[in-house]
Image 1 (cartoon, one colour):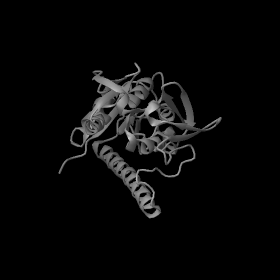
Image 2 (tube, rainbow, N blue to C red; image 1 turned 90 degrees about the horizontal axis):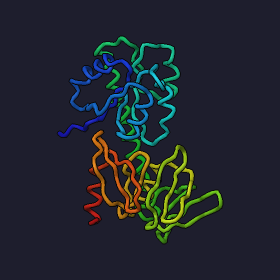
Image 3 (cartoon, rainbow, N blue to C red; image 1 turned 90 degrees about the vertical axis):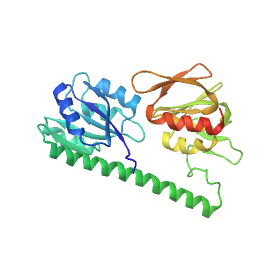
Image 4 (tube, rainbow, N blue to C red; image 1 turned 60 degrees about the vertical axis):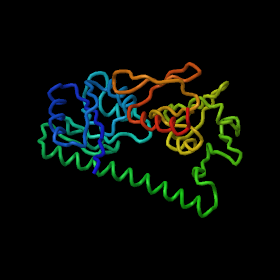
Amino acid sequence: MKVSIKTVLIVDDEPLARRFIKDCLAPHKDMEVVAEAADGVDAVSLIEELEPDIVFLDIKMPRKGGLEVLKEIVIDNSPAVVFATAYDEFAVTAFEQEAVDYLLKPFCHERFDEALDRVRKTIASRQLASTNQSLRRLLRSLTSKEPIQSPPALDEFVIDESNQLRIKTSIGTVLIEPSSIDLIESDAYLLNIYTNTKRYSISGTMKDMEQCLNPIGFVRIHRKFIVGVSKIKSYKATGTGSYELFLKNGRKVLLSRRRRSKLDALIKQLGH
């Protein structure tokens, strides 16, 4: 049976603390440490770039603390976060921000394994919820005789009967020809849609936009970016575990490692 590998980012300003977490992870063959960071600023950058499944995060660090990191990550499918810290007074705040567990230093391997079990259950629960949502959407499509690829009714955007992307903006409803879209970029709680000539900003999530556009030749390449497959020129490795993707219009964006294989499969499928 193939093991599903989960990617891990370790964030702590103490090298020995990072080493101990790596040692705790070593017996778990379903875990892969993809990067380490010594402060919160680098942590935010690496989370955006590498899209780890799990983050072990210290509280007090130079430049930006762990709680600030968690507040700054306004993205879909956020990683499962376990705080590992010597400060017990932040536990309530950490759980209010939906941390999976709170490891109080010094902790032992057994306590670490308990936290890892919680992480696995949390990730499995999220995946099940996503699957159930997709099944409900499929059933609703079948019973209502709507096209299966149609997303749920959305207030801000939808593909209409003529295969146009209909969006609601501050100035009213706009119809966009999908072939004119180069890129959709997440900007906190807004989505920026870049076409050949204009930029539109609307409310919404990348997850919903991904479901809306995937059936018509678009692919999510990063937490922050969705692109039209026909608009891609090339991509290359950066040497940090991710890739730079170049669009035909000259723009350069990040392609995460975990999404590259899906992109390759779609390019092959569509013959680009």
